[in-house]
Image 1: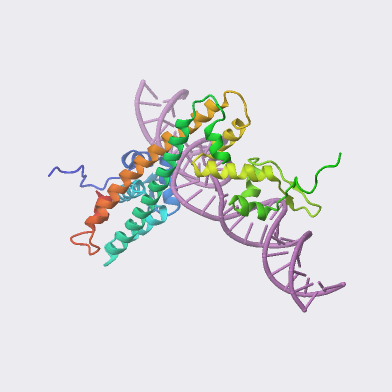
Image 2: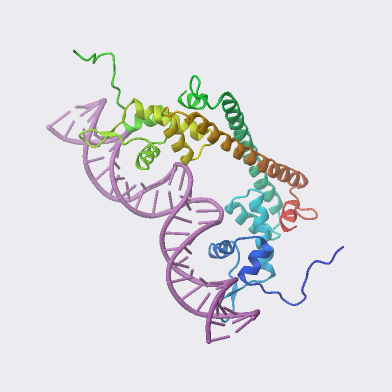
Length: 140
Length: 140
DNA sequence: CTACCTCCCGTAGTAACTACAGGTTCAAGC
DNA sequence: GCTTGAACCTGTAGTTACTACGGGAGGTAG
């Protein structure tokens, strides 16, 4: 087991450092703070934000969840449910399954679209004889 | 010369009729008119819009194109190109092919997501033993 | 000391609609 | 002719999830 990059002393991060470490846009971090998706950061004397490990973990969590296609509301629910409440696991699974169903529907729709586009495009020779099949399809 | 009023029906439609016939939301029709995606409608004395066959054809064209995943800008380009300009067919084909590529990329991304969700969700029994695998995945 | 970078805040913009609020007009029934 | 309810009008604001910008202040290397 490799020791993670842990600092025994409390680590603090500037907004830019946190953006780098969490692979999140800097404006996005401020945005997440504003809408309450991450806790409010402490401040330095200068007014610059001072984030801690907790913010980093939360941001990585959020990015992963977003990568998994969860909406902002779902992410919010996942955060609330990930705190160890009994039975929350079942709720989390249910959110994931709803999402999986939506993803599968999206894939199915896009595949139909792909076939339509590919077929129609293949018929087109780019010379409009007798008429462009793409436009024909759109006009009926 | 007497115009054959009886048979060559200059059909007019109200906004609601057009919405019904083109399967478009009524607010959407007004929106499309406002942004110039369809021509400005004529007006009755009362101020109610009066649409013609041309509007209906255009709206159906737009709906089809949108169903095919074309963006509003692409739809605008397709409308401009569908007017019979020489060589436009090649440009139309190019728009369609760009779109096809984007659709395929979206499908690939969603499939990766589908696997991740399905796998993680399958591991979850909804009883958090020892910990919810979905949350584990999000936390690393 | 002077660049230059990073950070601050607030606002506005993006796509592509969708949803009011608050009013007019039309069509049908009595 | 009157009433009622549906359909229509305009204009603005809300949606999702950010992203960009303007204009200024703090931090640091040479």
